[in-house]
Length: 145
Image (cartoon, rainbow, N blue to C red; front, side, top):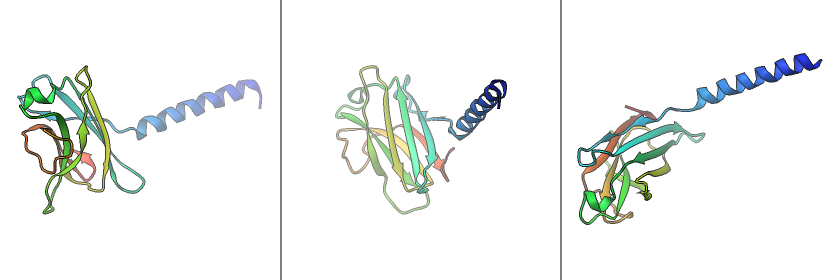
């Protein structure tokens, strides 16, 4: 193979790799926001992993400190409530907010259809949501709706 064909083949491999990478990435979907956090924005990226679990990547921007939203609150908690099952909301973890009012949480759940929501809470380890839903979305069969 001469140099000209090697360069052409290398370019083709680069293009094909880009197509594969782009087709595998899942777009993020916006979260609905409460009017109590007018500047707050959020998005969620939902994927299915190799074990058929649902992987969630939640990102928020311009989210007010939790104590400004609810007097006794110290943190934001991400919850899921499975659809079609008799179960309580499950705490997926705390959503820490940095000094620029941005935050992220990456987590995994075995559920495929659920309501996803964020509340301001006094503790990251609370067992039940006590606050109003600040951000939310519904995930059905691994897709945000």
